[in-house]
Image (cartoon, rainbow, N blue to C red; front, side, top):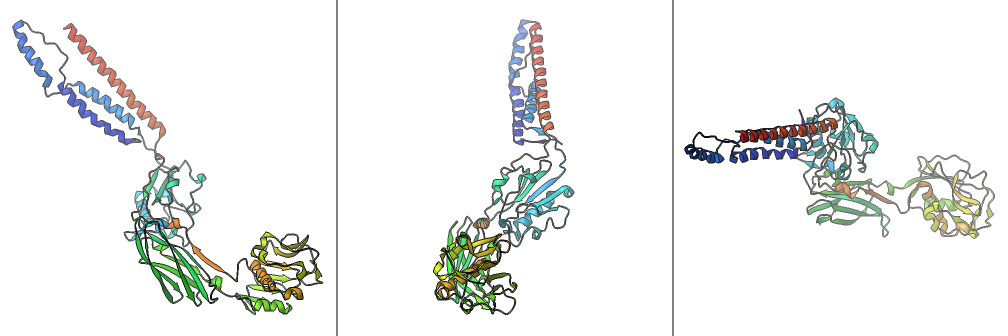
Length: 510
């Protein structure tokens, strides 16, 4: 049956009863011939009374029909065509995990979608965050929220235009918090709007580093944000192993951010920050962080390494000697690397430097370590250093290089047993810097961070409207029906004009 692209114009049909009512007060256009003058008064009396008669002038039907056709034409009637395929974009961003009426927004949206689909066999559900993740509507996983909710949500990213095929109808399940800007421009023909709650606070950052006052203590920073429209009061707990610490109670106004600090003593594999009581978005009430960055790195040191280098390794707070399964290896011989990260010290015939050493930007924090030429003796490279990344150079000669294909491999020709260098305080800093370069991170001052985008904690829903007409509209029938209605209105108008003209003509000739 026909549908309407602009159905609000149908309100204009209210003019039909108005036309009928107006025609009750119109006298008929006719003459009343009388055979004698004395009969004229009675006839005139009857004629004047006809102005308030109850039966409307039959002409009202034609004029109501003209109004009907014009109103229907403005409403843009069309014949729906069958949709061959439907692509449903599933908003699987963080806010869709919000629990309302004992189920997540996503679960409720999938249930509503299942009820609305008439042809699951031609429908594909596709992830909004990861368009490569898709499933047919006839697959049992399609309406299972666990299929869409990954453990670590990806940031919201609009689907590429190439996937917005014009041959398919595009639907969207969303609460509008992350999709509102995209949905307003994309050719979406139907939107399943979800969401009701507007209050939410979440933990958006958890960071830790060793205390400057006590190497055995860990300083912790926690950031809490109120991303809702209402004020809230929450208690913050910090768990380290079996110990639970009460960090404090926070009263947050809408949009407020609270920064909390805590100091922990002892070792643990994981830190867990939690807000209590839980709110509708339970997923952001907890943030976990691994403490592996603070574990000592097992290191293997060749027996051929000079004693000064051995002492530098033993004094390193983040290293511990290991006989096997080492993560770091210091090699002072021709032995092969047994660890994923290694530093090879090439020793041949060390010679004084002719130019001052210069750190290159790739050295990072090592650039802060002074290594004057007077302290350094260096050997010649046994082969070419082409294809390796230079870290420290003296003129055209490389002193420290890093393998560009294996970043965990560092080599140097600096003599680590030279007396002038060994006696300097920079010696231990130089060794520690090479270890950091090979490991790809700072071992002496590690910083562990776990964070999520503060926008992920926003759960305030937005009611979206489809930006495109339903793809089921046949543009040909849209124009054809409107034209037909206008043509019929013109035809009835011409008929009405003809009938009125003929009535007046007959009255003049009577």
